[in-house]
Length: 365
Image (tube, rainbow, N blue to C red; front, side, top):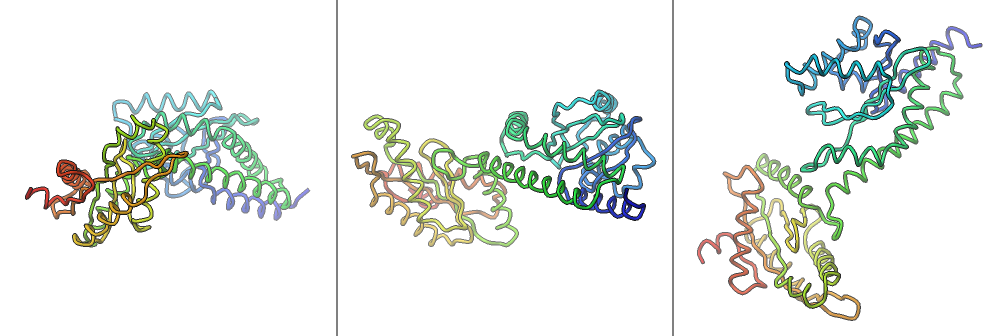
């Protein structure tokens, strides 16, 4: 039997460990009054101090979060939202539910019934890819994470129960915390993989349209703040349909992968490279003068023309046309620059293909 001093020390260690988790934990008693919350939960609900929990109910706490922290529920719908959430918690269902928490994104809520009649609530932040349907992302995340989430919540429930009784010895505490940390590391790895899948083109390995547009917009904002210059290159394969018609779509896919490899070899590590769709690629060059951007575009064009693609026993010759557009002071969206680069690309195609043309040249032609 441990002493009161040992119990106090163990309880303090447990609370400190739970405060380090990015998984938000909230323990309620049988009357749905908050009994314990870790730091992640207080941050998620917009509560400044844990002492507030001793003087409130779950419904009041949820009302505060919905109104002051999340701001996603219209006043007319607030009562119905609180009724629904309270009913789910009272039912003690373990089925995961998605919840919109405003600027914080979406969370996956699970409710576990405790032996003493209370409830353990866990809120896990979901990675949300730009321009991806949130419900589809939640469904995909749930399928990938179900096993690890159940393990983490089982350990979280065990730690919360032990924190209430303070009867865990130091060796057992270290074992449970080590296991939980390992499961959290696996969860973070899966989240990283999901984010990469959501922003990467499966065929070529470069950024997909959603990932490219999001990062390019952020890069534009950074350049505007630093008063630096940004350039967009639009790259399109010449006569790509003829490759598919002559050699088949498998050869066409191989050609696109080879093209992506050649583009990677020319652009810098800090530049952005993405496939916007079909045989169309885009490059963002940061802090690059107009003359230098045209040189990069020409190196890119000549590198593709000089390096045919090998597919089985065939050699597929490729050429590309490139449109170049510089950032203007009035540009606030990356789409504005892309449209000018796309117009220059169209003029390069009209002028005979396998060439580079800037938006300034296109305007004069």
